[in-house]
Image (cartoon, rainbow, N blue to C red; front, side):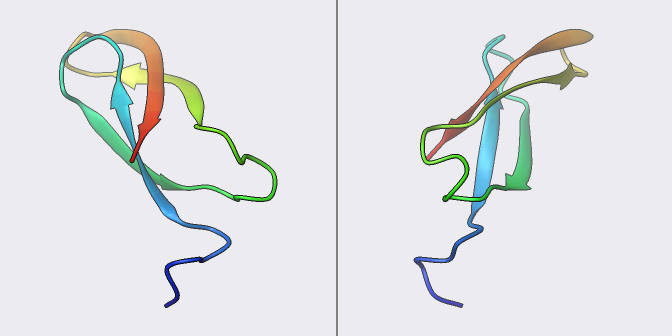
Length: 54
């Protein structure tokens, strides 16, 4: 698959500092900036922001 794929795989890292990550895909046309989602962090046992890391 090409590296300029329209839906690349991105890693979302917790902002709580626990080191927990989610792996997801994003659409570059709809979300050209870094993705930020509120998801559950099981290490912190609460919902926190997860930011895209490259």
